[in-house]
Length: 460
Image (cartoon, rainbow, N blue to C red; front, side, top):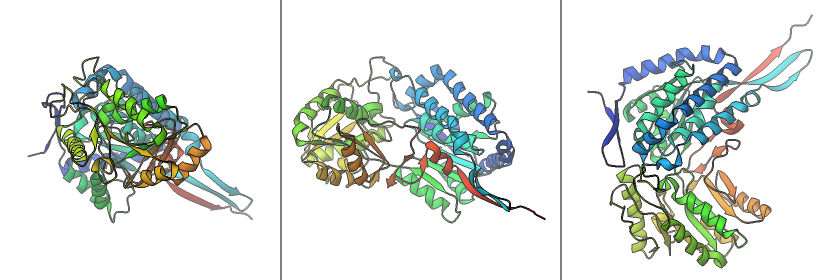
């Protein structure tokens, strides 16, 4: 009997959607179709591929009235925030705009004897494994540039957002992208593992947990297929003594609690200069208390349930352990907190790096705040983590921020902003956050391979 993938809605615990997973044989046949279609797709003019991808992106936008409530059902984000199409379109459109220059040949030299250049050529079949927390935006980061670069794409989306890949594929097909060129497949973990071990793909992009990333790399071991990963995070904020306090509170707390804290680059720990610490904590607690936890279909709700009960249980466990170890929890139990997926947002003080809540990824609506004496202590604490995705620095001194940024083990350094992905910059991490880089011109470099041409001219 085939496995059945089920999306359990966090709103009420019911099965919102289910799809049968492909057998290994069916999956291999689908990937074979993608491989067979790739040369013809790559042979199309770049301008034509760009036009079709942009049309697919626009078609997703036309579905937004259906997408927004569907996302609320699948992963709990309040409908008041309107879905993800703004960021989805921004990223895809930007990657389309730089494609010609990013994929241009590198001219090495030409004279009477030789012509030499380096060309970027597609890998072939790109496998994209996308997460549930920002299911459209995270997927388009790779899907758009991979297709534009001449690859065919196989998308496997998280079960929690089961319908996203199906909807994306339908939109792109309706826009004119051939079905074999962009496929959404429903795959079990075992089938995914078998495909990777069988070298079904030429490039793998995975966004998800550290454990999931390890499984991907282990399956690909010995195949020499590159695996690009964005895994866990424990992103810090550092508020210096000259920071704009109100702006820092609003941005960092929004980065910590928006989407129930389920953001790849969400703020999970904050270090505040001694001189601003008390004021920052007071304002941070007020920010958290002002949120309205509840039904994501209620237009007044600003904080919906976490995507799954087990995710909320893990966060509750971190909070409870921290309080038992001496931390102070500042937010009283919200009446809407049902002990399940609906979780009271929490601000913790009196925390330290011996507590799991300051070491391990929470991926939920909790943030710990610690006072620091200055830059040296802040740098030490920020780097005292096995993760490295982003760091948010708050100061009026750009040179100081750049100097501190140089000392941080992270993929992105923000100054006076947080929790934002700029498609012009490389999206990357270090340590247990993974390796690789998406978006920007570097994204195209990773989704293609260099091919060198050393052409000797025939002369008499």
